[in-house]
Structures are given as structure tokens and as C-alpha cells.
Length: 74
Image (tube, rainbow, N blue to C red; front, side, top):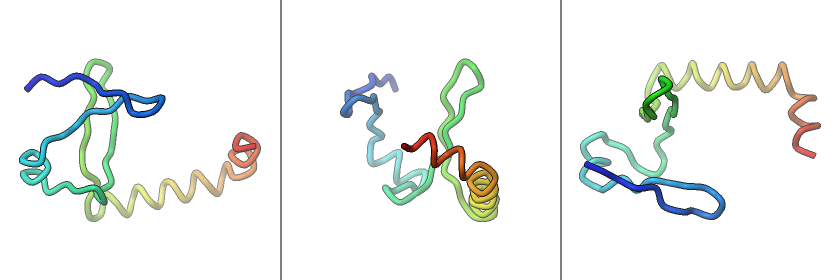
């Protein structure tokens, strides 16, 4: 399947058709992991234990860099 990116505000997005979402059990509430191997964009749902590890890592990063992130937000 070939797709083109669509404009969404100042960003670009891709529409994923309903049959693919159903096949992968993904809905609008599903958190997704986006990464690249340098040539491909890889999108995977975050589920179960992995989701807990991601949340823990985010909390640690936020705690460690709270002051810097607050300055950047201003």
C-alpha cells in the first residue's frame, strides 16, 4: 500500500485505514512508539509491561530535567 502525507496544521500526518487499525487492535487511545532505523519509520503500539517501562522512564527523565524543561517551555 502506498500513502502520501497529509497536511495537519503545521505538521504532516498519515491516515491509517480502519481495517488495519482493527487488525492491530489500535484505536485513538492507543499509545504508539515512533522510531526510525535511519531508513524506515517504525510505528508500534505500546502495551502491557512495555507501557509501564516507558512511563517509568518518562517520569525519571522529567524529574531529572524538570528545571530545564520548564525554562524551555517559557
